[in-house]
Amino acid sequence: MLTQKLDLPYYLMLIIDLDFIKKTFSVPDDFIFNSIKSGVNMVQVRDTKTEYANKLSLINKIKTKFNNNCTVIVNSDYRLASESNADGIQIKASEWGNFNFSNLRPNLLIGKSTHLYDNHEINNIKKPNYVIFGTIFKSKSHLKTKPIGLNKFNSIKKKYQCPVIAIGGINVNNVSEVIKSGADGAAFITGILNSQNPYSTIKKIKSKLLK
Image 1 (spheres, helix red, strand yellow):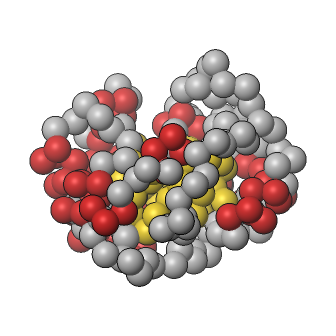
Image 2 (image 1 turned 60 degrees about the vertical axis):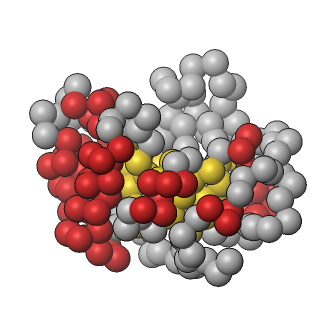
């Protein structure tokens, strides 16, 4: 199976859950579109509650509106990744070893979620196009997870030989430190969503990622 290569000038990923976004923004689509206009260039759909048809429609609207200016990733759901116009799929570390890549539409980007001590490495069929690595700092979404800190990026990059996107407790105030420590980019949830001015925050983060 041939796949694309992920090679972006910067990696600013917004992880979206429509139910969660609705708590702050009455029209989630507008928030997502404005976030992309402000500088988000990767969107990961990590949403288990929204109806399939609505997620499919959102992905296709993003790709129609922004085309190659936004890389859309689906978390875990191989059917949604294959039937939509998504660019790729994100696979959990625990699912990686036994994942059936033959179920996927050809040329999808393959992302892997990985942690410091990952016992799910064996899969001779596929290597990821990028990895999401964390939890870097203490995170509200993973309160029981011990933070990894900033000194493991180089070993992860050496292991996978692909872009490494950091996740977990990252915000506009610490993202520069994350990049200086070796990450290629960062993924955000509350670091953007809960900021006072999300679109201004995204622009500031983009500026720091490009330095």
